[in-house]
Amino acid sequence: MKDRLQSDLLKLAGTLAITWAVGSLVGYPYQLLTLVLLAMVVRHLRQRSKALAWMGSEDGGLPPPEGDGTWAEMFDALYELQKANAVERQRLVNSIEYFERSFSAMPDAVIILDSEWRIDWCNRAANQWLGIQAPRDFGQYLLNLLRQPAFVRYISQRKFDESYFIPSPRNPAVELELRFSRFGNNEHMLFARDVTKVRQLDQMRRDFTDNVSHELRTPLTVITGYLETLQDQRGLIDARLHRALDQMAAQGERMKSLITDIIWLSRLESVPLDIDEIPLNVRELAESLQREALEVANEQRDIAIVVDDDWLLQGSHKELYSAFSNLVFNAIKYTPAEAKITLIWQKTNFGATFTVKDAGPGIPPEHLSRLTERFYRVENSRATASGGTGLGLAIVKHIMQRHGGELRVSSILGLGSSFVCHFPNSRLASLDKLQQDAS
Image 1: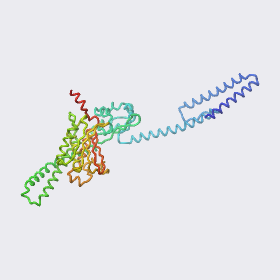
Image 2: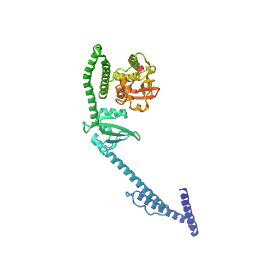
Image 3: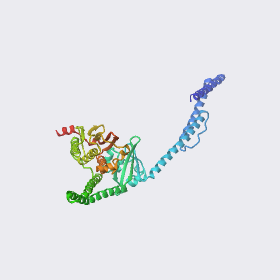
Image 4: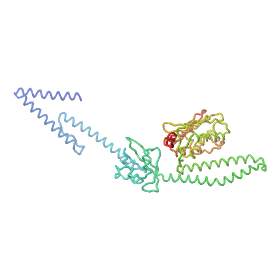
């Protein structure tokens, strides 16, 4: 570009020098130089006018106007750039149309929201499930169209890690699962899908499990009752049957524990969380668990407690006691008598944790991700021998989810395992603040 500028300047200087020389020969150098400069200005103004008319034309595909010298080269360069831009623009248009066709073909509703939660775009399913129509509702504030109070609270909390379920505004018999995905400059995409059948099947499963469990309790109570009567009358029964009676009684108790756990898990899935008004003192809870565990182990365990007394835990006492006791009694079952078990309650940067740490044999890493599945066992023989139902950690997982928390498990073979219950800050209460408020 620098070389071209130098060349143009040399040409201009040469033209002016020749004009001055000719003007000097005829005796009118200034007048001739002025005429030449005026002619050059008029020429450039005409070329500029052609360029503006061409670039301002509605038909972007017109060939460039005729030019001379530098203007001709500039017109050709602009025309090539214009053709390249047209190709790129068409490519972008095709991409946008492909994107719109793809999302429009989806059975799930898709809504694109700007940083102010106004609707930029939506597909056809958004009208079918949510009553939001394109392009009529483009630019509308989302909460002006979906006004359910619970949904408004969900949006205001900005906790989009979990799905939100609402009945369809177009058909209350249809249940929708809503999920938000953030992108760009605080923009969001809202996905809504019909989960009516899935939820109905899940409800049927829970109802079936609950009903069967309740129906089994009565005959099982009768059977175990008669077995207890027979065991009380061992002297009247052939000694060869004593072992069979003991095994039947033990399996009957295991069945009762299994049914109790199934009913409890079904309740956790179907009944809303009932939070006690008074925050829980975790030290008292841990000490109570320690006493019960030592009674079960006949005092043959070393159970230590490490508690940050400055923080209390807000939640359902019954549920949290169930979760923590499951972890403690699991540690008792699978930890040797000489090994140490530690119960830890501590504040973290993101909330607080209740940890049950043992020094047992540990759990193979390939099993860790499945520990909270129902009836999953690392070793079937060991679980059966210990009387486990395979539902304990599933119960803990559900209780933690109901309290906005999470159960995490880490283990090293030969060194022990740690079961950590993570609670968010919203579940904590400062003891100092409660005391100040009380005073």
